[in-house]
Image 1 (tube, rainbow over the protein chains, first blue to last red):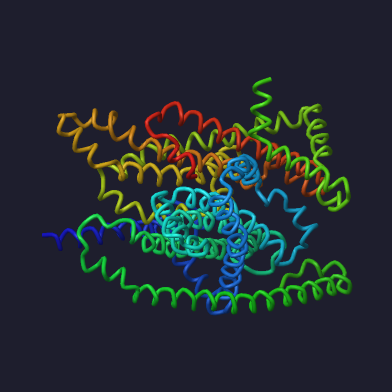
Image 2 (image 1 turned 45 degrees about the vertical axis):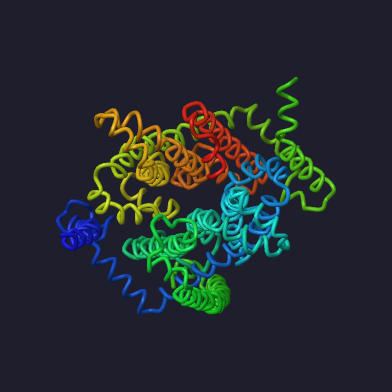
Length: 324
Length: 258
């Protein structure tokens, strides 16, 4: 009986998605929606296929991932130490700074785009800064809150055991605040993916945001939907990974029942080290391949700009109208 | 006088920041073309107030942001209550769809929204509503799901009927989570105003910023951005006050977490 219910649940879990995709395919074909505006799913899949065959998709995907990841890392590099210092060492200062931080967090860096351009140019740095500035605030807020909400009993116990400050941070404060910090990261990723697209409008030569905007400008609607689909996919994957990390990191806090095999297994750490290794590999891959791809794309972009202006000089009126 | 003193002690950081901004730019440590001194931003704001621009655009933006936000709240809170509560099966069906929809980015979405709704007022309000729905929805559903089961069982053993159970136990117990969602959404609605007003508008603060961007009028950009930040902060404060007034039994736990 229980097995039957599990099957039904599994079926239901995917039925919504399947129905959505069927509707997407059917609506334009049956004329319920204008296929010009809403191309059927198959057309979008086809354009994804072409993008993949070209190798264009890989390039856009890795470039966007690299930007998101490096932006997040920059933000974390500032926000985590700052959050720990403010939360643990000087909560009074944190309380005073809170209104200022809240005000600053309301400033959308996209609206200050020209300032970023003037300061950092239209290269990678201005995009990374835009992303990092957005991701900074949620991580900072959540780190401060997380550190402050660590069970005082734990802190006092650790202190009465006369642990050093380093041990206190790494063994008590960090695990205690970790779930909150991770949920901060989740909010930050959401914002990062939002702003990534905005940042790639600031004169990018590649990336998923650029893909969507370029397609929209050229009225290649299926290609635009394909880019949008991949941005959504990117957001979901990052979110799911962080959710998984969040759930894993709570293991010591929630042990409602007696200690079962599962709890012991989750404590044993063997699977965890496997996960960590996998994450590290993926991380390294994105960082290395991404940076190479970004460099390649930027150099190429520079090149094509030059040739475009060249054409413009020699070809008279025809040059700028020609698209390549 | 007391209010002034309270302001001085509570907002010291903001005052210090403004002072630092003014001094750094005046001393020429930062190029004034890139970052104008605060006084010039204030002067630009004053100029915009005097010729009526700022008030006009602020009101229009406020209407759009609030309209979208309220629309989202009206849709998302009942839906979240239903999803978190009785219809577990429906939630199973809808949750993956909502997860996908929540990731749909306003800066992409506006291309698609333009295709279907044009560039009218409806398109702008609906894009803000779309952004605002998801935090409210997810937080409400989570709030209902995480209602303390001891409370529920106690209420049941007192013989409350379903309606009473909902209004006396479930709704109050999930209120803090709902407010968290509302505050996140309110933040988004002003933060992403610029995305909504990129769609062929000719008014609103987001448009004012875009227009100033195109003309490289840095002072106006800062004036517009400051105005949006102030509005967002005000909205957050108002929601916080409402929360404190209505959710009296839960002190501050959700306040810190945002």
